[in-house]
Image (cartoon, rainbow, N blue to C red; front, side, top):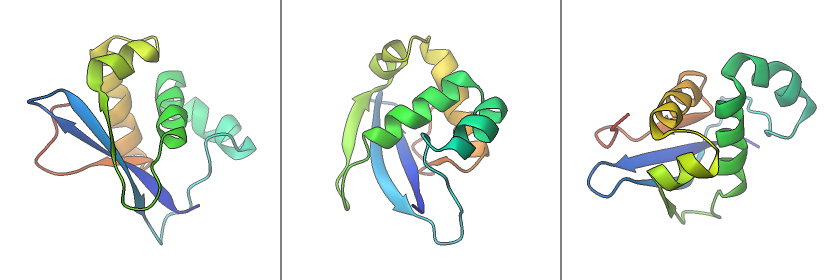
Length: 106
């Protein structure tokens, strides 16, 4: 599957909008794959891996988008909001997610 999670934090509402994005040049493995569990997890860390897995489960079909409260997502993952910000930045750094320019508050 060649998709990336698109996260759009909205600083006015503290919502993160999730959409699926297509990346034809990326070779991205599913979070539940053996490769991801043995090679990606140790590199990105447990919270980033958990966020990536959860967000990947919630990916909407086609061009649809869903919104999630930033703090609500952090607490559902068992983390403080600032730690979620660092984890999302780590996902972006490793090209597992990307932030839409101009909307980032992290």
